[in-house]
Image (cartoon, rainbow, N blue to C red; front, side, top):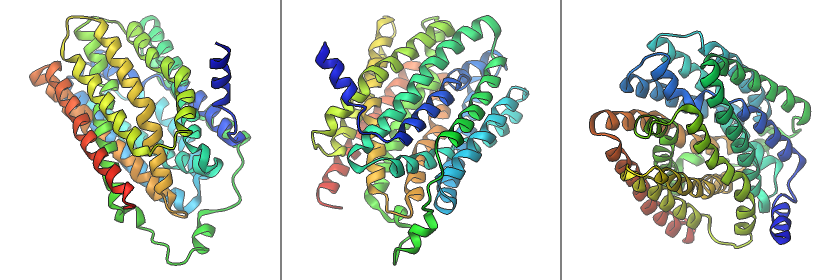
Length: 403
């Protein structure tokens, strides 16, 4: 037991104070992210929208995420990650507060589009910040620590949100989301200082720097498509899966929050020690990406049976294990692949792969559920994972050849 505790503590050693500050800020921000996990239920129960309309709203959610990720990458390469992060979080807070006052379908489509276009400029910026504030030999753990903070926050958020919804409805959640975004950015500006070296200065020192290097990297395109497929399956966790828990197993929001908390609890307890152990194994990142795709496919295929409630736990555990490998190592692959001076473009492309999945995953998933039922949707989601496995094997072979 003492050895396990020592290993757990060791997994956090050697990380910079800026990474710890970024993690703390992420914890504060994500603890307030209460609306998103229950957005599909809010749109159905409070606004009375159909599955088709909900899918359309999530498509606008994804479109805004694509715009924000692309714009965030461009702005990060021009102005640096620091300014982008501050402006993004502040304006996102105001947007979340405003969303509660929109009650029409098209109004909410536009509102969520604008909100996500602003919010997701933050994503390429924080990825570049991780690279700037960490050493090459601990970048995976730096990503893991920030993910741990995000997941701890999202574990607190949905669990409290489920209780708040049962007692007081959805309205208060929008205020909490907005205020925590603004609080997080005030903490960020106080705790983390703007680095002296600007992207323009880095680029000026390099000759023949190709600003479009990310878009000419074929292996990176394969990696991006793997991330897209991963997202197509994984984002069901925020759309069709809560509805499945509600409609097939009759779980209320609080019980759904408890199951989602299991996902977070496993990550908080086990992810950092796991990454610390794997970081020492010198195994190619692409092998971990392949295994994550295998676990993700299995997490949906086991849901094909719908008569035993315990299968929900089996599925969420498999999905969590997949997430613990998939997100840190797809991120680390992108960070390692990014050329100095244009990191924003690489990280934007990485973020956009998931953002595009945000457009299609809810729309396709909810349409399949509406026309063919949940079980067919789980088979389709499992097939996303299978295709991703094949692509990950191809990517591994290419990178081993230096391509």
